Image (tube, rainbow, N blue to C red; front, side, top):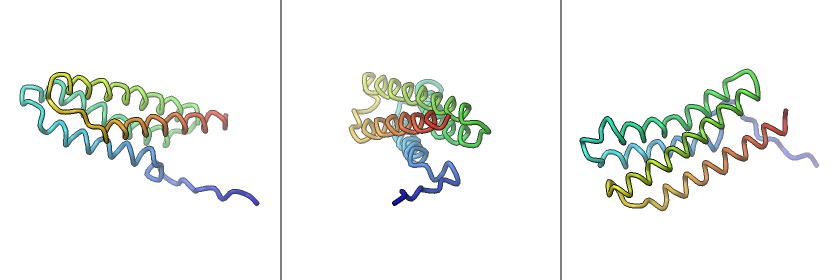
Length: 124
């Protein structure tokens, strides 16, 4: 019996994109309490790299080749690493407390990105 394949018609159908969007929402909530003097500093940087994660997943999905798609997924991974580091900086500077749920979400997105990359590489 053949496995039924899930039809992915849009990047919006991807769990990794949906979870990336959840990270963006969380980041905007967390950074709303950062000090005002960080508006153009850490707040802006954290928000930009969070937005970059699902944005690059979407942009890669819309590209013509699998190789390009994979490259954009690697960019998302890079942004995820930046986000993780910047959130750690915010914790160390006492702008916020450690967010266990957020850390678990970032780990999930990382695993999903690596899984999607592996799957796409197998199609090359």
